[in-house]
Length: 216
Length: 216
DNA sequence: TTGGCTTTGTGACAAATATCACTTTATAGC
DNA sequence: GCTATAAAGTGATATTTGTCACAAAGCCAA
Image (cartoon, rainbow over all chains, first blue to last red; front, side):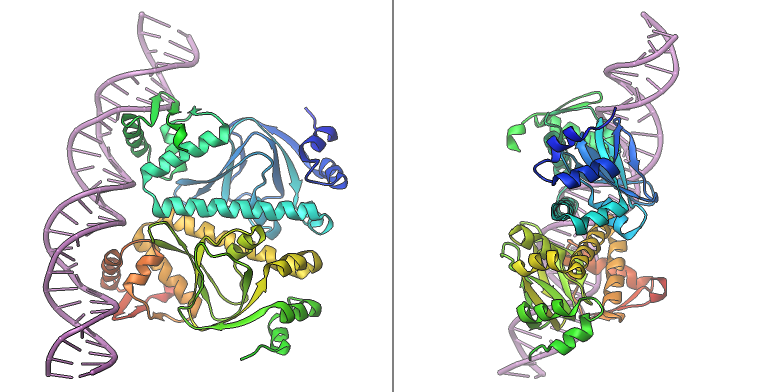
């Protein structure tokens, strides 16, 4: 499948000027990836910055022992400040990026990123906005892990997921949740059971239903 | 005391062009603050972004119950991405900024920040660099609190302080360290005692000496 | 030197989280 | 319907961190 400039225009028309759209179309690399596809691994060099067209991507931080922690989701027309930051510095990736669902995106090469920053004020805006959004996300993560207990963090994560996908039922294992919260599967299982007992979720294999969404 | 453009030039001459320096001089508000001075409180509106000339400032995140966690230090010619972010969005501050020592800085008003971004490419560079630096700092904080245990975090904090001030002796109370690590005074006292027992620090009232600095 | 204040030390617990070693349950594929 | 495998449940126990209550030590100021 190929991208056409018409749909680019529909998506970004009131955000980017037509010249920028043309350049995006010309130099950006259109990709479609399936759920679970790994877009980025720590240590890999980054030469492009992704801009999402549809779907979502989760960005995780990993430590040296293989534990992980969720940083944020990309969705909508988001882009990733980590890649930006790494790109502009020509540094290696320090994060993992995994497609959360079937996702369409444009990969923009580094040199264009920089070129466009001086050339298009709307692009500059976009880059700033990206940094700000991600900055806030990271602050949110810090709030969570510094000040909240695991059960609240777990509930918070489920709520975020719910917002992210617009539904209240997820197909996800306790193992995976454990990863995103940088804890173990058993702990997640136990906490989920607690949450089920007090009526916040309903559990079944590979599936968690978030009740009580009113309290968002 | 007043700032003169000559010293501005000495400090930022190979970073900013002369026109920008003139504007900095004209519109920036020069300040000298003493150790402990609170530059910013959560909830306060931010209309200026600080650029440090000398000294250092620590940036803390606070939760609703008054607990705090250290985010990063500003020093050198640093600026604060939080203020940037808040400023450009006209949002309220979500952090605390406290002078770590006698500190000289220029407070730049919001509208100039934005104006200069389109006007001076060196300023743009500076703003980007600031975002990137702080972004990395936040990632570092996340690594620490997500993956490390308190004793390592404490040691890490002492090491950072050591780098920050260029010396290995600090005048600081356990209480304050507790704040920066978002834990209690007792816990810090105990961990410090442990560290003393294994020869990593030497303790006395209001003072901590970091030994073993070779292992940085 | 004598209080009075701040800082630090510490015992005794409580709570939260991590880890290990299993068992049980669900489900997909034969 | 079986069976292999992934996923989830759970008891026992260890470790880490938090809390409370109070004692001891250092320091300043009258």
